[in-house]
Length: 323
Image (cartoon, rainbow, N blue to C red; front, top):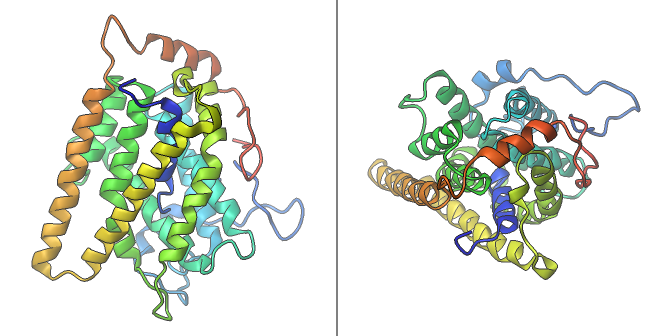
């Protein structure tokens, strides 16, 4: 498929997903306890992008309960997409699984040097996707929806591209457009003035750990063409994954430019980010388009109709999903 193996594409999609940056079972202080309920819709208006460890808002202060709330919001959006076999389900499920895995990692002592900042940054990043999705759902022509996301959402609704295309369009919009903006908004340093780049970079290892179970689940439930690799040691995933790590690195550099920009140069940086994401969205939309009668959505839709409720075939770092 245009020289790019789909398992490699899955690795790329993971980078998006947290690229930064749950039912999954999350560890509670006592066995059998209900998870702490955090009402994301009520928090969202108060989720200022800046990080404040002393804030009473659990997202602004970087509490892990905020990530639990983000996961519930992702589940709420993903479930009807999965039930209807919408082509948007591929990216929605990818982002959900990565965020569930992040929630697990955030509860592992010492996994992040500054888990509060990382929690906050992941929540801010997720807000860009949730906001784009909701605005597009309300009005697909809304000027509030970035063009890269419009291209991704419109292609999924029309069923114009393969599963790999949905992957790449989603990851392009979320990394190449959203990530730099989100990290600049979240803040690149902690309260002590030290760069949060090491925490940001550590997510790369997390994303790598999700690759194989995610590809297996997407292939088993939504589109079997997502796993067409036969290369030993997943070398295709490694190669494409490293390209995505470079995308994440560029997003951080864009965030640095935004953080140090004047009003004039800020507009230039944002314009460059927009232009790059739009160009790549156009490329992926064309490269991964179905070409009837040679290729079409028919086999994919038929497979999903019979398998979208199947369980994940492989465990994630947090275990098997319960949703």
